[in-house]
Length: 222
Image (cartoon, rainbow, N blue to C red):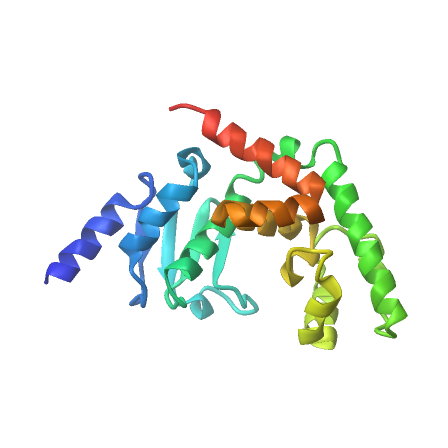
């Protein structure tokens, strides 16, 4: 009964006033997750978010092999996580997409981030081609998510992909599209100060954008 009351209070309070709807039994400490989120994510990042739904992600929709998903100002988070850090990580990543439209000009307006991303993609293409991996030419030109490219990266190359992106992209997911290049960068930047040096070295434009974005979020007052 005590645990039930505690969960009801957490759901009502949510994160910075954003309600949390728990549709499936969770296997992590939601209270700890909320406290950690409030320590590392500026309050303004949650402005306009309607609610967070914790559910079995396999029931949200087919072809969504994610632990979290963001659409129409609503965040979906899987009810089964590997622990507090895993849950926090997912929420932080989806918050990056929630604020993406509002701060689109800051992030993408001057095209510098796009230029950095496509330069890395072309380099990845050359590496894969040199290793007889037959990369699709669209890797050199597109910045948007493309299922054909996704299938190539995760089905044809698979686990070996990390060997090719290591030192070039923050992780494999960051190579899939410009939006995820930014999203993964935001996630890693927020999650730990220890990641800042690596991001700055590997992706200086991305690092600068993240510095400016977080500054904007922290400077805004209610």
